[in-house]
Length: 268
Image 1 (cartoon, rainbow, N blue to C red):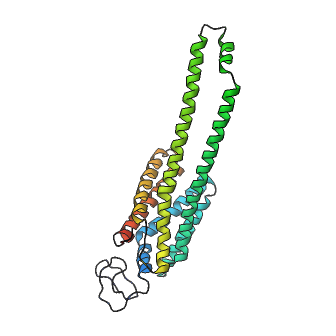
Image 2: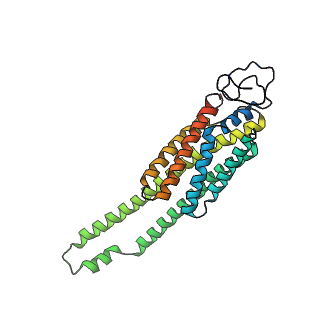
Image 3: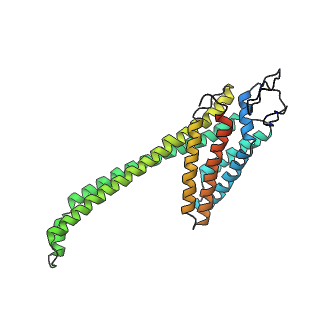
């Protein structure tokens, strides 16, 4: 049966097209219209492009970082999903594996945040202990006594510099923690929730693609930031190509979500 509106073709008969929602006026309803909707997305050129770009990124990442385990697993799971779609199967198990890989990124983000917080507290404690144990005034007095530089002025400059250094470290540390929090909680978590809802919707045969708009928007934002990173790293060819591939993956995934999961979905 071929849809007269979008051209989607499948061996089953539908009351409506699982891709565009056009009424087909057929007597037989698909046993799992959710799986058919997802299958339509997986058969699109967008998803194939994502698989190819992920493979390229993985190869260049392997050359730069040694062994990008997450990227390798993510690439394998994507190709398994694609291979199943060639057999007209929207396999929820493989999509669950993709969701698990995204969740692993989420967990690693929290681990990195915890390490940064612990390291920041430890460095602050070490700096405080060192400051209490060293008499900067005495050191200045002894080292500058033979010179014409006023000791009080030098001491004031040193104290000011020390205070600014502490505050600079604290500000940079808080900005870094904030960026990781935004990236992890507001972005990766939303994307994971959406991917998770895809395989759950297939298993329950219910259209319930949650956080689709949020996932799409964040993928566009992350893709733009990754593209800027690629421009900055242009002198390093391998890093630039890998970053550009990741940027395109995120943008293409956002387009895929927008085309197949948002315009026809009521539970966003």
